[in-house]
Length: 325
Image (cartoon, rainbow, N blue to C red; front, side):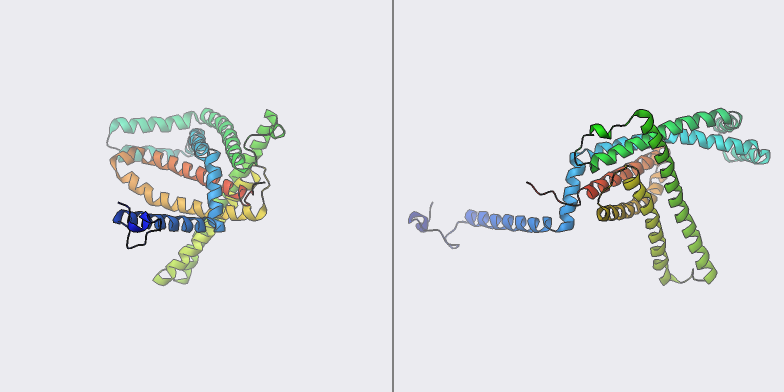
């Protein structure tokens, strides 16, 4: 029933409203307040930048590219394992005592005779066919590595280009592209080795210094040592991602955005490594995780690495908001 004020054409006051009208009015006020707060948050420069980067990442199929990079990364491990077996074969072949100790260790540590014989045969194969396995693994590793580098570069460029599609001038002759990818692969491997070496040397030096000074028993200093180690690790990650996001795609973004995006990637990568370090032992402790935990963990690590790399590439590319003309 309309109120007396509504019958007279006057707006109803709060006292004259029905409970339903009061509820609708309160909902409208809450919705309006939520929209205003949301718009205010979206206008914060950092939040607005994140939203633009997320939109570009989704529009340019960042998740799909991340899955493709994960597939090629995992596939590239097969020739790397072949090379590892070949190197182990050369070491064992030149050291008979070590080979004998390894075989005896396998026989003594495994109760199942069938499994022990299988592992012994694998060791014999690695020793006897080390040259064939090594050359085959090297050839396949080189081919898969070049394709991995090329796919990673194209995925980064898909996020970085002003226009998603490749221009005609971007297309190279196949042999010239492989030559570029060959040097890019070795540059990336060099950056990775430098990153791991810097982290390892810094960690060992820190432990040595702490032990030499007799500070390992001081509990309140542990957060400081942890912070120093984390800072060194992030600095090493920074060098790696600077190569990936700047040198590898042969793209010249705005310098300030590049340095900020690389720092974001370095910190994010350290978080991923920490989470994987915490989760992998838990996966391996379960019966199913003992069989598949390492594979699942490795694929998850590659996937998160790929998504982080592509999102930071999108973040760098959207540093400046494009105003509509």
